[in-house]
Image 1 (cartoon, rainbow, N blue to C red):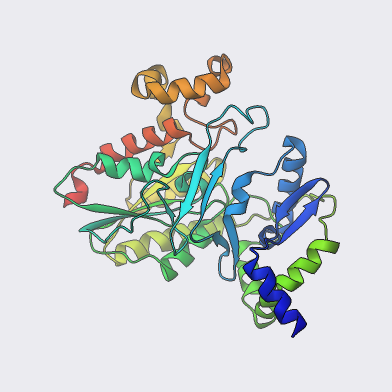
Image 2 (spheres, helix red, strand yellow):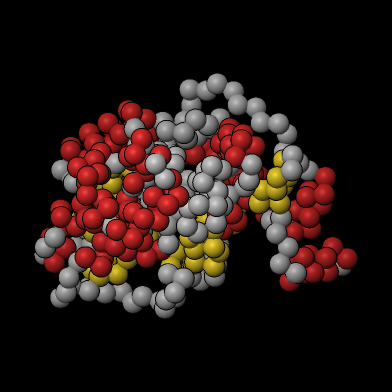
Length: 364
């Protein structure tokens, strides 16, 4: 009875389980990550000197590892780079009752329209670092004119891989005939790990795994672990394993494309920060399946000379943050300092490029 009452008290008090590392505090859901992935994030945090506020936007999930919290509104001001800690504009993450990202200004539920633009991807398609309205799926729909009524359903989550893409198609995505499906995975697939995403899924969803996972959801246990448990110094062993092997990445994309088409959808592949052999495999599978392939940030390069004319206000915002560094690293005009995630200008350019390929087709 005592522990039951304590569980209720912790629940209604809004207790947030956490784990510590040196002077830093991480949300407890991060222990769901592969140990090597978490160790690299520990090293990153120690180097930059702060924990990104956006990591508090997620909750543990048995099937996916973690998902965006429902009924969330979180403004993120510390992200991307310690050098530009107080210079980059803040951005807001808001979610609906199902945990899907929505507009912080307009939280009304969208009704299903004649067509739906489905988005399956990782942090770049989620719109990491930019407000919901500035993300490329939202910008793209604004460009598509009447008479077609289109709604966006964005299932993207930072850190997701093509393995999650197959789960999403199985669990959540309802495709109508003629719907456009934008697919964007690869960067996280290639990330080094101790165990693959599929192995971690199987372990977490085994009988023993489910029992352990359920016990770890008890706030009483989390509270006691918070008092005594802290993360050790990160060990980053050399490994040839990745979260999704190149062979499985090929199989996952092929299966996703085929499933989308079987349901009457029109798949498009968006390659963002997807380099090396994973990028090559994605292009190979897309060409073989005869679907459009967009290679970002390669597509951005022709716009370098006139970005300031296309997006004058946003260009001033980023120029104020970076100053003359933008003259040396011209990619900062459309990418964040990690030179991977698109900023608000990058998302606008992506919407332009995709719209040029989609114009008129979505009405067919």
